[in-house]
Image (cartoon, one colour):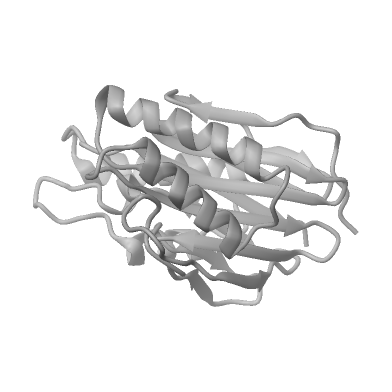
Amino acid sequence: HFALSNEEVQLLIATAERERAQAIDHFRYTHILQQQFDIGQKMVLAEVMWGLVLADVSGKGVPAALLVSTLHSALRLLLDRIELGSDLFARLNDHILASSAANKFITLLAARLETESGELHYLNAGHNPAILVRARGGVEQFGPGGLPLGLLPGVSCRTERAVIEPGDLLCLYSDGITEAVGPDDIEFGFDRLAQLLADNREMPLADLMRRIDDEVSVHAGGLAQGDDQTVLLLRRAA
């Protein structure tokens, strides 16, 4: 079965950080954050539960940084009191609407992983679809369940369910990865990322993270990219 170490919340905001692969018993994870104003967060919700959050804030500069801080504080407060689901989304949405300019919004993918069963409940508010590479073969994606936070009042977002089986690989990422543009003005793309993950699904996570970084960099051909690049990889041990 899967049990969690007593790890404190690690929040990555406005940093450029790469971590080696780490283990929480039979789950291993690694992540990279480049540039700023994405959120990649992992937190212990209970003894046998793990929370994952990946969010992308529209815009740049101080307004985007303030919106990151607003989302961070709201998540820390609400996740202690409300289950992942439509009520959490509604409260976050109201809070972001009240705290930001009309042209600001946040895409969000929040998930609750039950480590004993591998069951994953997730809420996708307009974020890029997570990629689940099955050990037995095949690639699945988590489509959006609703609109981004702060876009419109009174909208809802449904919670979906998936099961991470032994050997499966989960990838959460921001659009700075799939929308990285090369000299030929072609984006890196979802299909290329999914194929890269499928072809290297058994590779050690730290090596796979470097491979993704290298492939995106080669594709970009030295061109400066205007968007943040965030990736989180999680694998359940076979």
